[in-house]
Amino acid sequence: MTSIFGIDFGTAYTKVQARDEEERLYIIRDITGKALTIPSEVYIDKAGQVYFGLKARDEHIEHINDVSKGKEGFFFSDIKIVLIHAAEGKREEIRKLEQEIRETLDTLKDPPGPFSIVTYSIAHSLAEAQKIFKKSFNKEISLDKLKVNFSHPSLQLESCFLTNPDNPGRTIRYEEYIRKAVARALYLSQYIKSDECPVGELMSHTIESMEFQEEFKKNLSCDYEPACAISEILKNYPEAEEGIYILIDIGAGTTDIGVLLKESPSNNKLLLHYSEPIGDSRVDNILIEEIKSLQKKEIESLTEEKSQALEGLLKTKIRAIKEKLISDSSDELNLSELSLTPIELHLSMFESKLREGYLNQILEKLKQYLSNIREALVEKGYKQPIRKIFVSGGGSFFVQKYGIIEELSNEPVIYTSDVGSFSELSEEDMRLQVVALGLAHADVKPSSPSPLKPSDIYKILQQMPDYGDKETQ
Image (cartoon, rainbow, N blue to C red; front, side, top):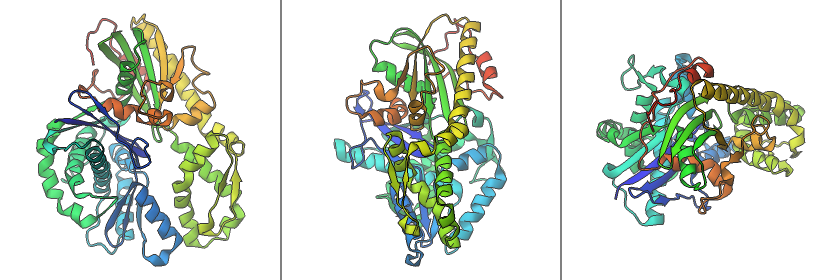
């Protein structure tokens, strides 16, 4: 049986879902019953052990709590930033990262570079997905029959170049590197049996994975996240009328917008895909800085080592803090690991800074996007109405809390947690997983029109196909 995995490789979390060749959906869940969502985090200790996801967080916290346990290592909590730095040509940032890894893991003769760590993170997500898939559905997976569809690189990065780690001095396109990384990750996933693995074992299979990537690349395809998500929603939205649908996918690092024309029940045309580097990670940074300011006096008395550990510890707790704040619940933040006094947190304590540092900015961006989309649709001769605006992504909860998109739109705004047609998924899972579900479709093909690199959104809209152009997705 051919299996199709969809990978939504996010800044903060990686999601993987699956279908078979007959388009039957298989929800891949973790041990808690939630759809699989893995933190895009890696921790490597000085003994050369690699830890992934939640285990990486635990090991990092254990090191913070008791340095004497010898758990000191390198914690990577923003995997995607490596690719972003490289694609934007920020080689100095990459060199700093490489130097930091070498200095932290000075006990290792040949520590892995940042690109290898990215590949290991993807490999772990694929390993977890395969393990759960086999156990939950009693189905074997053959690597040569596995197809993988992954989220397309952000448009503003796509035509940039990055150093090819296998051939220093040469460059390859961002998308091509991702293809290689995913192919190698799939091969290496065979050797990751749990949330930890010796780095030496992964490095020993590097040559084999390079050989495998060449034959497996034909089984890889990429697609634009919003287009996949809208298609997935419309397939499960029987009352959807012909017309134009917009999806805004707000993640931790980027906000993606897709515009799709539904011409008939079986014909959807992608009109626009655009990404902007603004996302929910700004909320994380605002909350962390405000929490630190609330305990400023106590933090000033911390030792240098504990002061350095504070930021990492807050990052491991921030998701739970956000969930409490969004639900209007108070939350006691206990930082006993650093001997700090517990403090009670309320959303009202952060509202001013959230509006100033994030909500007002994303409001202005979305106002510009939606206005220009409407203008471009008229100019290009699209007379079909905008039927709905769908909103998804882990970064959309605060946006919904403050009604940001509702302020800008006369059309119905539907958060994908409210679609209600996926009985197997919780509301939270639906909002987080809709892109991975769309990517898992067997019939996903690279999208049209060809990727563009606009200097601003208006230029991208000017290059939208005129109505009557029959290029379809």
